[in-house]
Length: 588
Ligand code: ATP
Image (cartoon, rainbow, N blue to C red; front, side):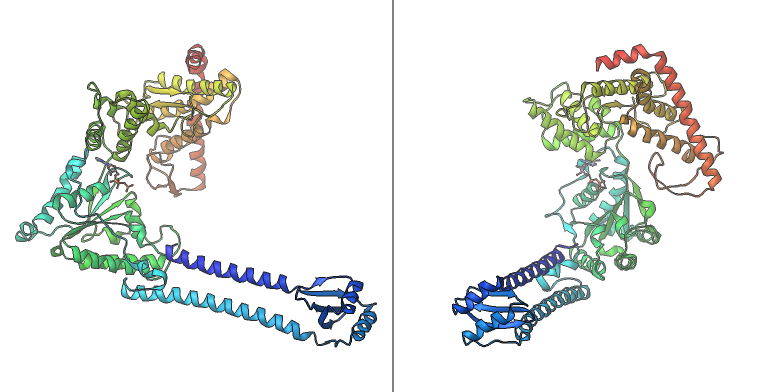
């Protein structure tokens, strides 16, 4: 919900609260005080009451001193009260309707007033949005709702300061985008040869691999403005707002051409029809159409280059990726060990982090397996913080190692108090992982094991491969399942009791076994995969079932057998290596 709508709702809420409080005060104030009949008669006889009227068997009067009304209920003693009133030569008003009518009239007035205010606020909101949707931004609007439909493209102050020197580990990607820089710098070179630059370039990769950074560096190298807007910014609950934002963006780009327009989370803007997402399907389609028109309307002479980033290219509408739109797709991979070393060097240089002379960044890169550029930037900062905490003037390998643990395993929760029994269970459990992996040549060697709670777990065993790996064979996948089962089996064999500590391990066991059977055809169901998988290494993201109930049963049987066999192997191993397991557990 936008800020302006929130303000309006807040004002509406406040008005409502004020009216409610005022009504309560008024009602409370007008409520006559209930007293006994004898007290009422006393007040009459002392001449302290006026405006007396009878309402059924209730008699109400007002104190002459202005301190409020009084009332008494009196059916049997009514003649006595009337006699007392007549004795004082006072008149009785039997027309109680008068006062009630007054009350009703007042409350009706308040209700009508309240309704009128609500209608006014609603009308103003709608009018404001309609006006904005028509003119595509600018102008006044109630409480500044004028900003509602303006595109939220962020222009970096001045030119982008990033260059290709700030990017490491993805040289092939930079080679691809260098052409765009050439085009932005010298479009005539392309035009003379009748070449047209691809209008849109889609960068695909997991979060943090540097997609936005590439866009900034392209603009920085070409010396043109860089506009960045998120696809989700076009996603509004109000009709016409998304389309109006696209029109406003178009205006801004034309005014600043040549320039780079970077659209992050393209899938929020250009999601396929029929792929589930929250409502407003038609409105989203309108916004997408408007955006496609914007792209089509920009010829290559306009000097506007669109770059976009997406983590889920498979959900993009084909209309957005067809030739002439985002037709150049560039995969941005996470960096390999050499790339990680370069990226570490870049961030150490950019942040001016002082290092010990003997620090080998290649060694640091080895302990950062699987980290993206964003993780590495974070790691450098964490290492510098660690050095500060330790009061060191220069950052050494130990600081990087601690920082890597923090980034990969989570923060050490040293203050968490766990009982000695629980601690020994955790030690046995982690030792089970160590033993199952250490004794399996197909598994990576355990790199670090701890029973200090880190992140969500009470203990962690961390593995790092000797080199980066892009393929896993069947033996390696089975070794992973056995390693996960090691913790549970160790509890069973050594403690004679199983605990909830293995729940995450068991989830992973199932994910690996399922992926082996359904995604990689490593069971005995033939050479085919089962179910549609939306990506993800393990295939736990199977989103659609495309097989029969009978096949589902076969899959379940295969998965159960595969895990069962792994369990028996681990059980045999831990039974045989009981002594070694206790050694590791005691050391922990
Ligand atoms: P998301 O998909 O979440 O938007 P992204 O792929 O766009 O992520 P960026 O925002 O470009 O990632 O990267 C975040 C930060 O990580 C960058 O500002 C940069 O400091 C660092 N970074 C990422 N990749 C690299 C790289 N290859 N070289 C140097 N720094 C990098």
